[in-house]
Length: 382
Image 1 (cartoon, helix red, strand yellow):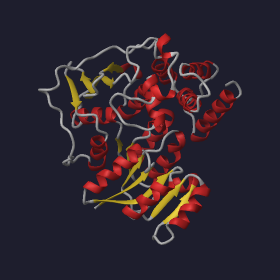
Image 2 (image 1 turned 90 degrees about the vertical axis):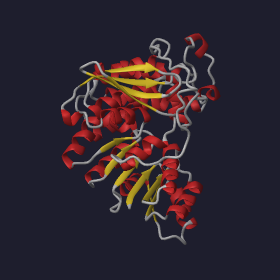
Image 3 (image 1 turned 180 degrees about the vertical axis):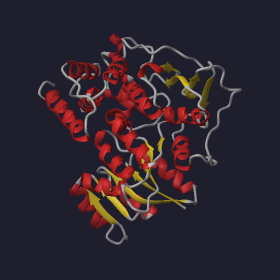
């Protein structure tokens, strides 16, 4: 049996992870953590019988304790509870599927407890990659990527590093989102409902908006830098609208390896849980007789400046990626609440970065301070 803890169990990645648990007989769940959706979390507790459950909101946690008082589960709350779920003693792998920088401290706690990390929380590496990767090496812990693009790169690299084969370039693919090919003038009228209609993937609201602005791809560029030990200049974004090629790696001899498949997040999740073993996964398969062609395009960084700003933040380093991420998180929240227009998301990121002087090699405390300071500055102006 392999035992896992899932941080973000009621979200898209979390629920799909539990679908895999249902289909496999040798996976069991020791801890579940969610934000406020206690109705779904209660269902998960009753089905998967974890020893520990965490709810971010303490009031909701009290409600859940009452609802599952007949179950042998300990219910905790807040950051302390999230850390406890991440370090749950019987878990071997921690699926980090929470959204945002809230994932930093639990990920560190899991690594310090010797757990392998199935990483679906890209903000952790974007803002604290210098801390996370160093600690993982010191503790002998594996960071196994769950994002489809990073899983694709990971699969292409499998066995290459041990032979000393060097990466020339990472080709990080992007669908282009729902607004691929549109002009900035056309984007000026975008509504929340429009931005939430991703053509290929079913995801949470925040990541779907990030995909539409290309900010998500920018975050993935910064994440790939840490995961695979390359420079920002070695990562090239390629638009691939069908989401058939999930990413590629070019080696120093010019050979390019790609991982292809249908757009199904359960594949990278299951691969991370069982690495290096592959298991049968039910679902649709690629049919190359029906796939007439695979199209590619260059990303438009003028129409979608979020990607350009991500490269700038990654190259500046230090606390600049923190500011990029924090500004985007708050701007997306304001857009979803219909407080700002769509194009203002990138404007807020640009303004926040322009005023910031990055601090090199920040500690966790300095990272969180930069995040909070960015939030306060934005709130005072928008």
